[in-house]
Amino acid sequence: MENFDRIQFDPNIMGGKPTIRGMRITVGAVVGLVASGYSVKKILELYPYLERGDITQALEYAAWRADELEYPLDLA
Image (cartoon, rainbow, N blue to C red; front, top):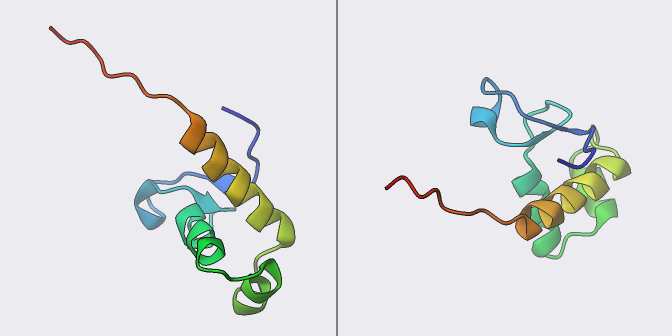
């Protein structure tokens, strides 16, 4: 895995989904806001506890994850 130091996984937070620095804001939520047309400035206004680097890394993580290949296991 790439070095995503702001992305954390904890089964006790948001069901283990990737979150930003362990807060209750998921990578998916950030990506969804950007996809919906929200600017970084507007996201930072809506979530003042986020930092610009959090948003950048969430997008980088999502792009990396989308590019990752998964192969089915041959269990036969």
